[in-house]
Image 1 (cartoon, rainbow, N blue to C red):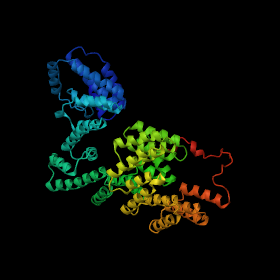
Image 2 (tube, one colour):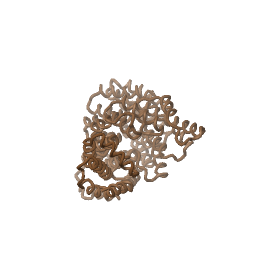
Image 3 (tube, rainbow, N blue to C red):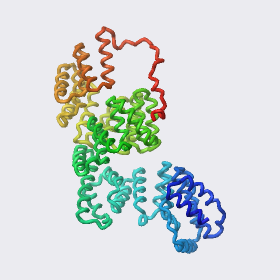
Image 4 (spheres, rainbow, N blue to C red):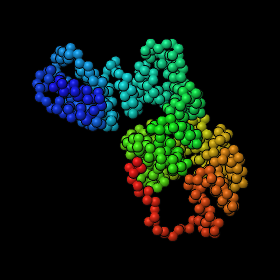
Amino acid sequence: MEAARESVAALLDAGLFASAQTLGCFLVSSAGAVNDAGMSMKAESLVLHGDALYGEKEFRRALNAYKQAMQYSRSIPRQATSNIRSSVSATGRSPSPNSLNLLPFNENEVKFKIALCHSALCEHREALQEMEGIPSKVRSLKMNLMLGKLYRISRNSRSAVVCYKECLRQCPYVFEAITALAEMGLSAKEFSLLFSQAPNRGGKLPSDSVDAQRWWNRYVEAQCCIASHDYKGGLDIYLELMQRFPNNVHILLEIAKVEAIIGRNDEAIMNFEKARLIDPNIMTYMDEYAILLKTKSDYIKLNKLVHDMLHIDPARPETCVALAAMWERKDERKALTYAEKSLRVDDRHITGYIMKGNLHLSLNRPDMAVTDFRGAQELRADLRSYQGLVRAYLALAKCKDALFTAREAMKVMHQSAKALKLVGDVHAISSSGREKARKFYESAIRLEPGFLGAALALADLHVAEGRNREAVMLLERYLRQWADDSLHIKLAQVFAATNMLSDALSHYQSALRINPQNEAAKKGLERLEKQMKGVDPDAPEEDEDNEADDIDADQDDAELL
């Protein structure tokens, strides 16, 4: 069956996994494993068959094939194995790249493949056990990266750092390792030392190496800033790198993601759109973009984005989160099923946890939201997970937990106006804490004068204490600098509460001119019109015939294609 083995290897090289799998069935079922040579060939055939099954994403079957191969290999005496390998190498056959140099049989490579199968099946403990059986001296770049990820999943940070550092010593451009090490607290100086230890590939000229290290160092500094929640410092460096590498999609997306985290929604949307213009098929962080569009009530763009993502790859977790964002307005429970699906696809997808937590809050399930936001924090704590936890704790009337979480956010992000506002939000819940809340809101505004969230919260505080005039003056001062629909809506609400209905009407209309899709403005205007007609806006409406509901609400997601 030598010819069949070579044909399976050729099919694997060509990516024809289904044909390789079928031929592999004939290969592994053939008789002949009666002596040492036959058993060795049987082991190699099982590995090839496992490669084909892995390519077809039949991970459980591939796992079984690899384990059988290991059993056959271990049953052959070492002396006999050595003789067989010598004879195989003498044939001059070149091994398949897909089989990872399995001719002659390499137990460490097969252990790595077994670990890959376990990892694909989310059996991380078993994967780690296999990887730890591979001696450190023979671990390849892929092996070290895999082991680093597994150690991090098991919360063994010290061992993860060792593996990721080894990755960068082998090749400094393993960006997954850079991000992971930055998140685990490695300093920029330590990164530079690792870069100097990396081999000089291809005999590059010194000037090329110096230039590469210069921009590499700046990229690492940006990652370190963002990992330590110095978002402004990270953004400044990314903008500097954009001058060196214009139209770099990766940097554009990183900028947009950070802007989304810190609440610069308009700038984030603009940069996501720039990235899509450069590469319309990009999927990375597109769920973040979908959430922003939903926040801005731009459902036309959101539907178009979801349509495109379903066409590109419906199985990605980003697509599931984008679908959740799209369905949230019509059916929160259906949206929740998509958020849950995103985590079944990738149980380490942070945006999936954030979306799921926010949906649980909307569905009045704050206890489940706490679990979701904690899940996001365990992977990587950022402002949104702190905000979600505070909201969930307040909904559960756990004010001490909310205050502890908000203060933790302030300690971690000591230069963040958003974190200061978060502490103020907790204090504002009780009448006795409003004075403290006011001080935190004012501090946030001093730190970041353009932070509308703090201005809106301070306006709410003024209204709660009967200082409507101060609230109006604050909001009008901001409107002179920022034409934002949320400021108009808040002013309209203040005027409506003080029975200045014509002024409220004017501001609702201004908000809708800025953003015609703003749901809060639409609902506020509808409520105001009832007030102006002398109708109680809180009175229950008579049941109406709902047969003319939007027929698109029941449209299958597949029809979006």
